Each structure stands twice: as structure tokens, then as C-alpha cells.
Image (tube, rainbow, N blue to C red):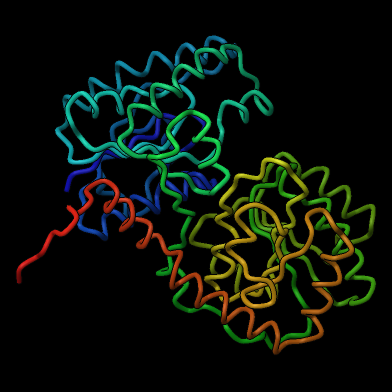
Length: 389
């Protein structure tokens, strides 16, 4: 099977280290393991490909230049005929798979015109997200592009139930399948399922340092823990716009000596860093529109780590409280601190939660399983079909 993977979002460096970049890379890898040949069409490359993706045919679309917001929007929209022409020139394909971006629709409309299966993966309500966090001049055009893309796709993939509900508002709910994010279990074959022997209890966080990741809650909770457990340590893996304020908070509370901030790291470094943690957290604050499918939590669990996460959105379906991890009220610093102290005091509980978490993820949330579902949606078997041996 020949697949065109399209990522027309200028904010996603497909070979970068952001969570969205890793998502693109892992889906391509998993489709390849299913026997597919994948061509990648992208606006932003973000560096050299990983060694195992170096042979993937890469078709770079013209970059969206920096400048005024309105000009950038028009430049992104202008990529549609270019993308369609490239697909026509390089095709045909058996499947067009696109990661939803704000201004892209032509690949899906080409697929509909040629009778090619086309799936659109939707990770966020991008129009609202763009308007709130980055600015949006032509909301009317963004809504037109979304309507064209959603209705041209033969199927849509939502990473969470909240995204499916969002898509239902566009009148396409009957064509949406929920497929949460997965994990590359091949990277975690040497998971640390035991309790580490050193005496410093390490709380870990992985992710971009952005406001909605609840880093202030994490600092507050760790401060409480550290007062009770002075040898506790905090390991924060990642970088982002909140780093300066995070460092200031840690310094104000005299927690800098107990904290290590790694900055941005490559995906290859993540397993070794997770192995340095005793418990991992996702302390998201309260939100009325939590639509994420957090990669970090799936990777924590695949590494055999006990997790403490906010009882919100998809996380309450991914983590079974007191079985595969601990759920705590979002934004509740005291509850988070008490959960961490509880895990510090009980190595056996950490071990049992971590083992159950890993077993659950490997059984239900690998990228290979995601790829199998993608291909099943794209090419469903006829009802009553019998395969003769």
C-alpha cells in the first residue's frame, strides 16, 4: 500500500522534537511496520530525519514566511493548489492521510475527486486554539477551510472523546473514530519495573513548558513534598516559554538545588531520563475544554512508572485510579503532594502501579495498534467476507 502523509502545518517541524513532531514520526514508522510505503508531504522539516526514517520520500512544500499574521494566513492558504499538484504529480496513492492544519483542504478534496480513501487526523480544535493563543485574522476563512477538509475526508480520526464531540458540531460525527495517541514500545524494551536503589526519591515531568501543563501546581506540590521529604528531587525534561518563570519560582522557594531542568532533549534520550524517575506526573490545571491525548502519560506508563495525573478529559479513561496510576483533582496542589508522599512511603505500591500501567499500555496503546486501526478504517473488510487459506 502506498500512502501520502500530509502535514501542511507550518508550526510542526516534522523531524523536530516537539510532541506533535514525534506523533508524525511514530505514525509513519508504524504504518511502515504494517507494510505500507509512505511519502511525506510537509511545510516545515525541522532538521535531518531520524536514521530509520531517512529513506522516507520527503516532498517539501514552500515555507510560510514570517511576517504579518494576515500575510502568513494568505500564504498558508495559497499552498493548497501547490499541494494538490504535487500529489497528482507523484501519485497515485492508495490512501491520503493528513494531520489537520488550519488552512489545508486540497489533499482531501483531491482524494474525494479521485475516489481515494482519505483520513483526517484531528488533534485539537485549531481555530479556537489559534484565536486564543496565537491570533487569527480571518476566522471566516479558517472555518471555510475546516468545513471543506472535514467534509471531504472519507473518515476522521479524533485523539479524544472531546475532539469527537467538537467534530460532531461540524456535522461529521458519524464518520469519526476515536484513536488516542500511542507509544513506541520498541523504545521501552528495558523498562525499569523495579524500584531504584538510591535514596533520592525523584518526581519527573516531561513536556513543553507551557501554561496549560500545570507547572505552577507541580512546583507548589513539590515544595510541600520537599518539606516532608528533604531528599526528594524534581526532574523536569523539556523547554518552552515558561522556563524563566519556572526557574524564578524554584529559586524563590529555594528548590533550585533539588531540581534538574534538562532543557529540550531528543526522543532517543527520553527512555534513559524516565529511568531516573520514581514517579511521573501530569499536573494539568482545571479546564472546561481539555481535549488532549497526552503523549507523556502514555510513555510514562510504558516505561513502568507509577503516575499521578489530573482527573480530567481522556486521562480519566487512560488511568484507572489505584490500579494503573493515581488520579487527583486538577489544580489541587495538596492532593498532588499527598499522592507523591504516599508513593514515596510505599516502594511496593510504586512497583505494582508501574507494572500494571505498562501492561495496560502495551496491550492497548501502542503505535502499531494505532496503525492497524488506521488501515482498517481506510480499507474496511466487507461484512461477511471470508478469507480462504
